[in-house]
Length: 96
Image (cartoon, rainbow, N blue to C red; front, side, top):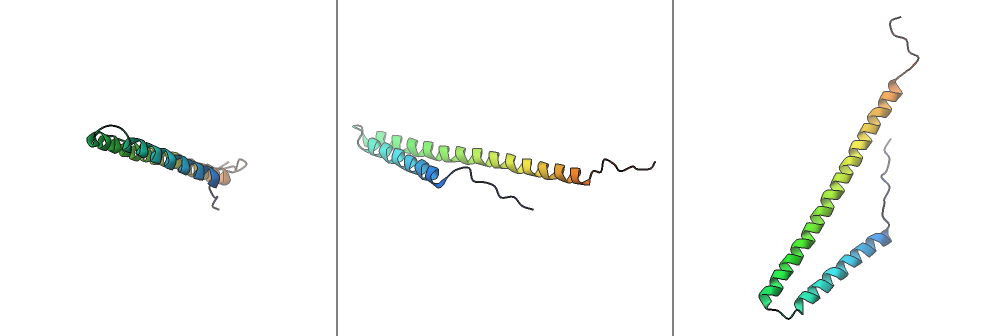
């Protein structure tokens, strides 16, 4: 008996999140490109933006992995409990 894990987000929510991320990244890139500073300063800011973006993706993956790990552990514990309860007979009398 395998239970499917229900999806918690809709396709529209995913699309909204992806579009929001893309819009923010594009707006920030355009803003850095048109800043009235030297090329070195723009390059430093661009590297900083890339670092923040990769760090955000890494953090999101770690949070997701930790949440999934907790869900798997919970399912294993639940399966063990169900097995114990199925095997337990409260009316069974041993060695009387």
